[in-house]
Structures are given as structure tokens and as C-alpha cells.
View 1 (spheres, rainbow, N blue to C red):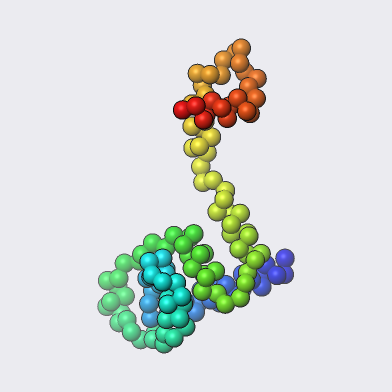
View 2: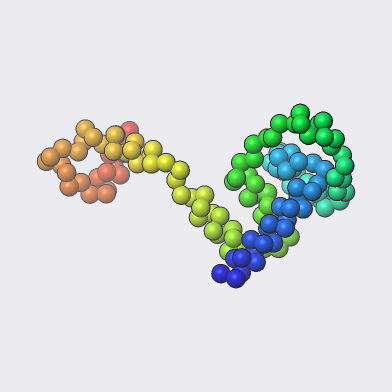
Length: 134
């Protein structure tokens, strides 16, 4: 548990450093997803922190861009210098949990005609075969 907490604190400090850069985190992630990853990592390490770049008028006009959590975590793990196996595994588990039960509902909807009183004890193999037949 202590290793996980240490990894989280290290990733958090990396995120804070990314927020201090002159380029927004959203733009950094979009550049990371669209360009050569090694070039971006080198560019990020060489950038100067410039807090006074944006005036207050520009801050009011600027609209926040949406940052997708999965893209943020991928970027943080890539930019972070040290390995974080425990945190990586935890985040992977969290993103593997389905957001909805839509797939399960679709399976039952698909099988409602095949599931009758005489066939209510279907084996998993038969259900799998029924789903693959379509």
C-alpha cells in the first residue's frame, strides 16, 4: 500500500509540473496522441515555464477543453520518469470495469426467443454458440 501511495504522489507531482507549462494539458495530450512520442517527450523536458504568458482577458475568453481520463493517464504514465507498476495496474483495473450493463442487456434481449420454459437450463457453451450464430 505504501508503494501505491508513493507512486500516486509521484504521478501527482508530474501532473502539477505539466499544468505549469505554457501549453495547456489538453494541448499536450493532443500533441502526444498525434505526433512522434519521443520528440514530444524531449520537447516537454526542454520547455520553459512561463506563468505570465496569458493575460486575464485571454483567460476569461478561453474555454476549457475536455480531457478524457484514459488519455490523461496514458500521457501521465508516458511522461513520468519512474515506473509505476502498482498504479498502472490499479488504473487498468478501473478502466476495465464496464460503465453500463448495455452489453449484458443486449445478450438477454438477443436470447429472449431462444430461452423458453423447455430450454431454461442452457449451458454457457450453448449461449455462446447462439451469440456467435448471428
